Length: 108
Image (tube, rainbow, N blue to C red):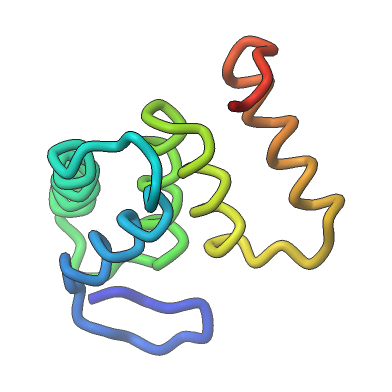
């Protein structure tokens, strides 16, 4: 079960996870196999914990950590939806964080 931000609980659905990753990767050079690999790693990560419930925040963090290494633009896209930035400054902070993670290189 996935515990949503508002406290609701939903059945985990791989399709929803993959759809969110695909949206972030739209028009990027991320292969379908990479998207499936991210979903596999997220599923494996939550199942290894052995708990019956996982917070949506934790799922999002797992996806973001993988996207950060695959495609910086897809990462920022996912982060913008997942973290619900309230203003441009929050968005810019995330971009600066991503640039720092990439060793100071500008995001493409």
